[in-house]
Length: 514
Image: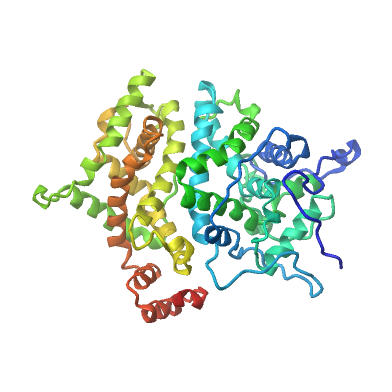
């Protein structure tokens, strides 16, 4: 079997899937089953075609990244995708080099870049891609989701010619999946059996006559045509999406936030309007498509402890000469006041518990900025700033991910909002029962207001986020799954290795020797 691939460049991508299905094919194609919003997937298909289309090469010119050598090697040393489980055949020849085990993989940079690109995309959609009417129906959230979906970023990786970089390295399984994906774009039958990035849920209208539960539980894709199946659902290699995110993290590490914004702007400005869904212009659904999620059950105790610690930190005697959390967060209160003044209205919560549309849309930026700032607050510690390029830095990712789940749970966000007295800046409908979910939405909206007022000085929120991270560390370091991070930082390699074994995790042992 010939698996050799031709060189892939940004200006001459492999054959784009531009052929349209015939009328006969369209008539005989099976109807999708169990898709909540088929228009969403159709739009994503069209968007990916535009990202990959060779007709845009003269208009879309991404800037060079010119990374230092040590950072570039880590960026392109792709950590294995655990979902790429299909074993390559014995005669498969890897077109690229395999992972370099002597250096760190791009896992930490990918986590950082994921937060950065998500925030920048949300901020761009909020400022440039949404009219006032679209603000009212969460159009910006749908636009942002389209820009940052893994399948969209995988197409962007090919468009940018990242596979041509001589430093590109990936596992054998990932390379095989990349090859299968590139061949599928030439209208060859799909080969992968992986699950989609975001399996479409069942619609409420199908609860009376749902498809077989066995398929729904396995997250299998709907029965779409071959073209839809290839582009939208399961064939994309997540390693390429991770590579784009790691590249974003590497650019910020090397040259700073402004350089990352300038590098990403061509993608956002050119494809941002294309990511907007025209069919949502007349939509009247006020339901948030991406609400905040409750914390995982194993962290319920951590949530309660963190809420208690947040209240304690605000009651700390001033004699310690340490600003309390409420004082550090006054920048959020000021941002809400300034935004309300500029918008000519205060934050309002209606009888259904939904905050006013303008501020609800700002909450999308607020949630992404909050996530990004938690990572920055964690890496603010001088001991951790150099860990991006070390193997130990890879193990910060599951810790910060767990910390983000805890801090961004509705209960903790509501506690932060109450300690900041943010509810004093909000008009509630008479007779409304104020819930944790409502107050948590107010908290992320306040962070969105901060982004709108301080977008050129995001560091102003850093002291507040560092204090939240410090409180989270006090609570979370007692969890067995998180103790290894502190064991590594203390230099106790033997303890860290024992903790790895107790967790039953398959972390690479070589990371402990770095």
